[in-house]
Amino acid sequence: MPGQEGIPSVFSPMTRTLEDLNYFTKSMIGMQPWKYDHSVHPIPWRQEAATAAAEQKNFKVGVLRTDGVVDPSPACARAVDEVVAALLKEGHEVVDVEPPSPYEALYIGSQLLNADGCKTFKSFFRTGEWEDPGARQMSFLMNLPSPFRWAYYLWVKYVRRDDIWAGLIKDWREKSSYEQWKFVAKREAYKAKFHDWWESEAKIDFMITPPNATPAVPHDGMKDAGQQANEIKLDYTCGIMPITHVDKALDQLSSDFSIKRLNGVAQGAYKHYDATAMHGLPVAIQVVGQRLEEEKVLAVMKRIEDALGDDKYQLLDID
Image 1 (cartoon, one colour):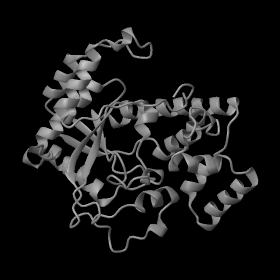
Image 2 (cartoon, rainbow, N blue to C red):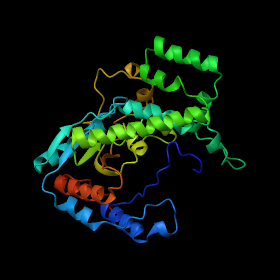
Image 3 (cartoon, rainbow, N blue to C red):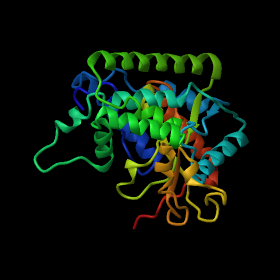
Image 4 (spheres, rainbow, N blue to C red):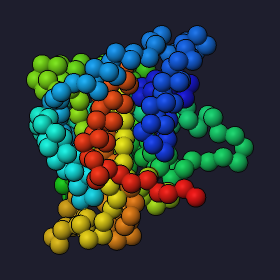
């Protein structure tokens, strides 16, 4: 979206198979889009990077099981567990990781995403167009008079005792240019901190995470669903691959689960989770590499698919 540079948009191809995704990406880069789009890095397809990842004997894999804001649902956690088991069986080193606070990234991103009070995306509306439910919620909170928003913040923090949601909404208002630039500086500082953690502390080859807290939600449900989308703020390379399907016998919530005990973000995600209604839906994991590592991430996705063997995701038959 022109002008929305706080959290740049990300456009990603969606394909039926990993082979299709690899072919599309390689073909797209082979068209040398930097010759007609100034925003594209002039980097040709690096087959040596793909080959190196395909032939590397052992990886050190970081597993981020939760972002600490919304824990993954049983189905999404099981998908991660299945990949971990397959990688361990192949002899790779797999470690649970704790990167710099994902909540910090969520906070910074939530302040930058609509620092203009939602004016930019509304400026593109044509006659007869309106906000989707998620955008409408953001606009409502952004445009609440300050006394009402402050009262809502106090109620969330001290009555509901929800520090997660309260911390997000406290400063959710239109920002001045000076305030926005300060958040841009915080974004860059977080990216530097994450890079240092990856290189100096974690020392991993790639990371796997749940891409979302739940499987696909009903139409209009994304206005509530919590997401693990910090890689967008980091500008890291990510690939999402289906691993299994929701199983109503395996993926039910525990008997002592109570949505009322969750923070406001998690409540939005879990209000739609129903393992019985979702039975059979695809469940994926996310492979995360560092910046500009598309070739490596695609090769790693292939390694994971091969490691799963006969247990890999089965595509629907096409007549």
